[in-house]
Length: 268
Image (cartoon, rainbow, N blue to C red; front, side):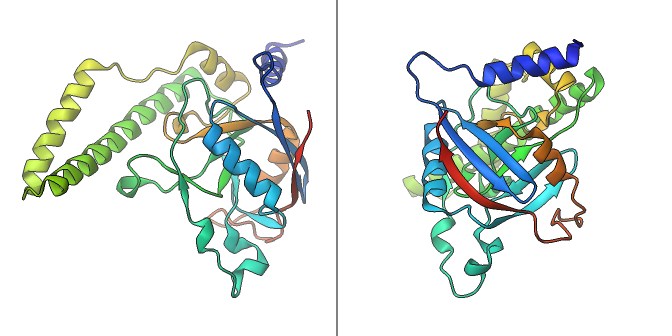
């Protein structure tokens, strides 16, 4: 048995391991391209419970994959992609967010289940979309590509830290009723960022994760930036089939028919 197969099997075995007595939550997505079985992480209870409630309510039934990128990920969960929600239905109740649960050790290997979110300065706390999620396909990496991915992780972290500090300083000034100029806020933020980076080392992809990225694959540049709350245990071939569908530049499948037929909670 070759090295790639051994690593892949070890990943699957780890996916089935849970602390003694801990309940396992599994969801099956029946899609137009086959079944995908997901295990939800108990380390991210906010996302786990929200996802289970949406599945039980039937929210994901007949909903489309509206963003697919071969070699990256497949995304779904936008209520506007279901016909019955497009005309006259109230979708505003689904435009909520969940506080981020970004946990070390939960990373974007192939098959990772993660929450989509709004990026940029409008979301400095990295809050997740209440309904939209993506499943990682990714690619197999080399030491060279991982070095570039690691650099991007740290750059994105720095940008997000800047947005968070800006938001906090503005909120503190408003709360105190203090008039403060943009230049003064920028100076405060610059000092805080300098202090942070003086006292914290840059992020380094852990060795065990590097090995998975170099054998099984994934999208490491998303690590530390999005909440990973589960993983695929069955149906990796279905991810590949969906990701291979022809799509436009925005990732929308040309066929318009790539969807989840039904999502159900299943027993182990």
